[in-house]
Image (cartoon, rainbow, N blue to C red; front, side, top):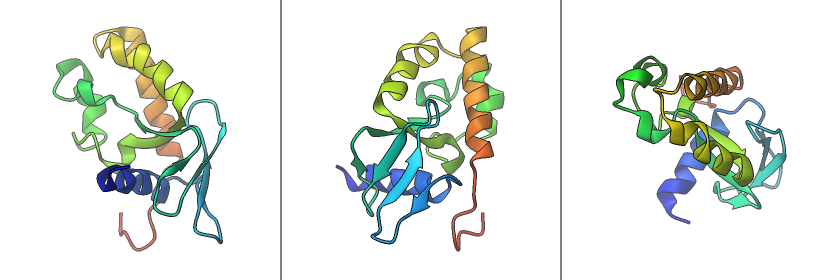
Length: 131
C-alpha cells in the first residue's frame, strides 16, 4: 500500500471518535455505514475489509450542485472531515449508487449530506493537532 494512502487512513483514524488505538498499536473502529468492526495496522493499513471513504465523493468537487457540501470540508477532498472508514462492501455500494448519480440527483445529495453529518458526529480533534 502506498505511503500516501496509509497517511490518509491514519488521518481518518486520528479524527474518528469511535476509533480505538489499541495497546499493540493497531486501530479498531466501525464502518460509517453498517457499523461492522474494522481493524487497521499501526501504520494505517487495513486488516481485512477496511476501506477509505471520501464522504463527499471526489468527483463532486467543483460541481455547483455540491458546492455547499464541499464548503463544509474546506473544498478539499482529502480534508479529515471528508475521510471516514467503511467496509469495502458499503464503500463499493455507495460508489455504484449516490456517488455515481452525482450531486444533481436530489436523493444522492440527501444521502451524502446525511453521511457527512454522521461523519461530523464522529469527529474528534487528533491529539496535539490543535484542530
